[in-house]
Image (cartoon, rainbow, N blue to C red; front, side, top):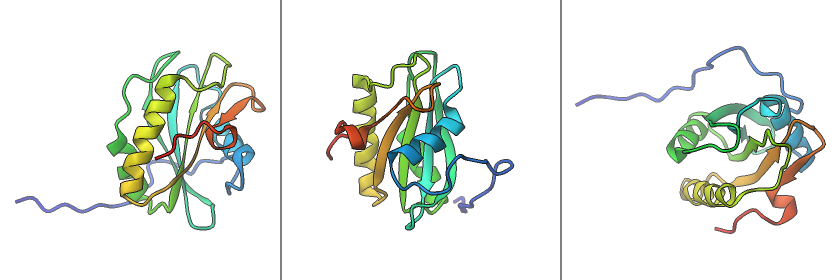
Length: 149
């Protein structure tokens, strides 16, 4: 029978995000824009947050095409959150089209991730959609579109 160990391993040099702490939606949007805002394909990113709302890590969970991310494996997100000892997480993705409005698929995927994270008692604080324009974003929490679980 195999014996497994779970270890937190830094995969590359540390990121320099625009924000070190997530105090509100604008700070989350700035951090996510620095991470994925200028990419030409949709990226789903997770920011891992400690009890003081400081960002302790980031993870690119999925990369899609120009208009959507086909499949999101929730296990990948939660495995990384557990390994990073996250108290909570902020989900984010980019819309290269420039329109930050969430699609039906965005809302469905968000609800699915929130339900799974709730089982592990890792609350999802927000899901922020960023665009190439740093001032153009959609915070599901602030706009009231964050699904209720």
